[in-house]
Each structure stands twice: as structure tokens, then as C-alpha cells.
Length: 278
Image (cartoon, rainbow, N blue to C red):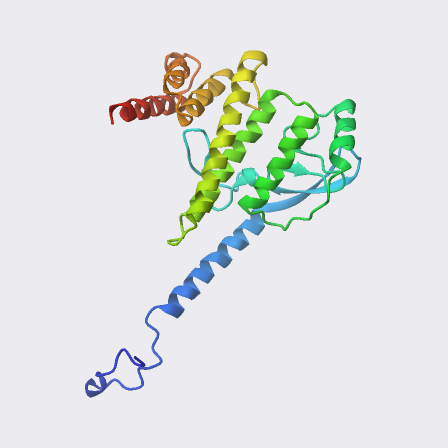
């Protein structure tokens, strides 16, 4: 059909074939929104320099300007959700010369012995890669996994390894959410992402339990009651409901837990109870 408005000629409307009902308007609007978001992201990101504590080379770091990302909400396992950009995509610092990678809070905290281990086991195998100005979730996953490998090589604390695993679980969940925005999404890819998410949830759970028992607080910027809550929620995600309730109950009755954390703990408790009733 060449003219959807054919038949209106007798009402005085001629040359209606070129009228676009939806396509161009929608495309231009989508393009305009995307271009605006990309410009905002470029304004939020900036480069800073740091000296690698392993090889001594100068490295450029992509960072997110403080206060520029608006927090919208958070999942029960504390995954934050932002409006324009996801700051923790840029939380791994990577030296492209020697392959040393770590979360920003741990990057400079490395001993000579640990640096030697990195040189012998990471640098000798590492093949450098340059990343674009803006990272995708897949790129962030790659960087986080390299940071996790480095944490094993340098014999980092269990809390550091657990925190990396937790963030990897967040990243895989984000990828799954992106996949599901497509009406004809790849179900196999979605399953693989969900499997990876669960695997890293399990590793995070094991690491945080170990850290809770062996390490002094705070760990990874979290106090004892926050880690207690997190272990409870990770337990729930792994189907360990009885164990989850034990950890969560400690948060609910704690005098040190703030109202926000207590409300989340009650939400976890309600989810477990509702699932048991179904």
C-alpha cells in the first residue's frame, strides 16, 4: 500500500504519500535521547593518572565524577542502580603495562612480595588491551575477573575476593536485564548469565562468611552489621533460608543497624516466609 491516506482526496487532501506516521519521528527522538545521554556520560567521566605500584609505569584511569551519578534504588544484595551511568563499572584499576588489576580501594595497598608474585604470575602472561572511554558491562566483567585473578595471586584477604565476586554477580545481573529488554532475546545466553550470577553469589557468600569469622571490621568499607545483613541476603539467594533467617534476625534486633538496613532485612524475611507459604 503506497498511501495510507488514499481516499481523502475528495476532502481536499492531496500529495499525502510522503507523510510519515511513526518511523522517522520515533527514530529521531530515540537518536536524540541517546546522543544526549552519551554527552552526559562524557561530562561525568574524566581521566586521572596514577603510578602502578607493581611496575612503576604511569597509567590513565577512567573515573566517575563524585556526585554526578544519581542513585535511584538498590537491590536487596545492595546492588545500586543509577540514572545515567553505573559508577562501579569503573571501579577496577588496571595497569595495561603489567596486568596488575584491583578494586580502586585496594590498588595501591600492595606489598613488595605481592608485587613480585604479580610480576611472576600475571605480567609474564598478560597481553595488553586498550579500552574505550565508556565501558560496557561485558568490558567491566573482563576487568573484574582480571582483578579477581590478581587477588588470588597476591593472596588477598577473603573479604577483598568476596567483594569482587559480589560485584561480578551484580554485573551479570545487569547483563541479563539488558538481554531481556529485547523481545526476541537469546534464552541460552540469559541462562548462562544467570548461572554466572549465581556462581559469583556463592563465591561472595563463602568469602564474606570467612571474612566475618577471621577479619577485623570494617571490611571493604562495610561495618559488621552490614556484612551480617549481606550474608543473610546472599544465603537467601542460594536457597539457604534457615541460615538466612539467622543472619537477618541479628540485623533486625541490632541496636547498631540503621532503619534502612533493618527495613531491607524485614523485606528479606518476608520474602522467605512468603516463599515457604507458596
